[in-house]
Length: 311
Image (cartoon, rainbow, N blue to C red; front, side, top):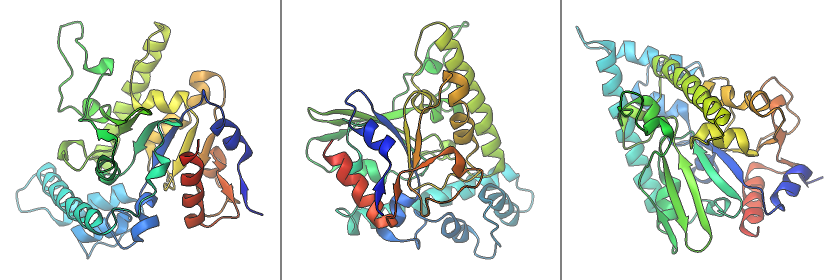
């Protein structure tokens, strides 16, 4: 039997409710298949070093690639920077190909500002923003950071715009004429800025440190009856839909936030996930409700776009 999650439908029909979307590489896989660096971490890392035997632990696999690509007397940090530049070049090339060949194929109807307040992209590319910017009545703004992280501190200093915490808490506003706007976040990095890219164990570890800072900042703001505009806030306070993302244990910052929701709010907000098999009950899937039952991935994407288009 083909079923839509009843709790999701109830929230979707509530005019006061807006969702936060976590968007993964499945957004691309649904359209262009798995043989692209936009849809496959394996493909991306193999492009960097075809001889590396990948384990699926991509932050550790990237560290192996760093060691294999080191030049004599070169610091590992410099090697990492060179590899990140290669990643950016590869992603830009893949983006150009998508924009040339698949402009009208992506399910952009899921980005409905009447029902979605925020999109948290786990991808490095900017394909959704570029495609939306081509549509009549849609304008994609530049990155801004209006979190209080960017405001003057006690010593009258601002957080550096090149710092990891600043880069991970900035966002774009996508404006839909007469229909509202959606905030678009790239906490793991963005193709136009190598310093923002989170890839490899060392950068992932630093990302967790930043997540703790963001969480503590949120707690302080809440105690003072203030709001701080970060992706963390949007995950804590909204019902969440995970689309095209398997949410592996590698996504430490996302897991830290999702498991903090009940602790922070004293209540459980629903987290829905588009998944291949709704019957999975391993440790990570127990945190999420399946969005659909009895539908293939293609059918789920089509159904979700149909539901959002008409709400």
